Image (cartoon, rainbow, N blue to C red; front, top):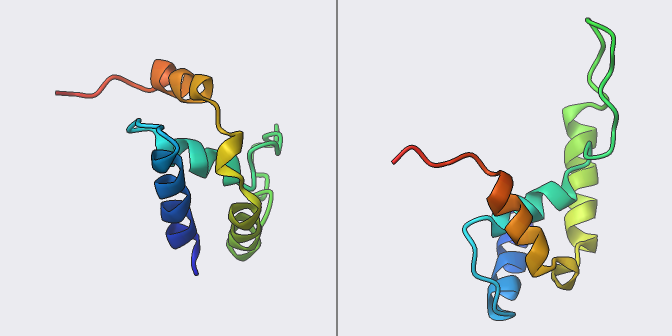
Length: 88
């Protein structure tokens, strides 16, 4: 199973738990992001914190460990509050 399939499975689980939000996928992807807590480099020409292969490997491991029950409704409300307004 690849990362996208696992994210989709987590989304279905969260929707079955009663969570309805257009930001569910964004919350899951943010939680499995491997560079989430890596501080940005202050150097102008700094190398990325990890290679793409390493990032995808860590992301795959994170999505396997992700627990949909760890997402609270308040987390979704926060994402909705800080998301940019749609250009309708």
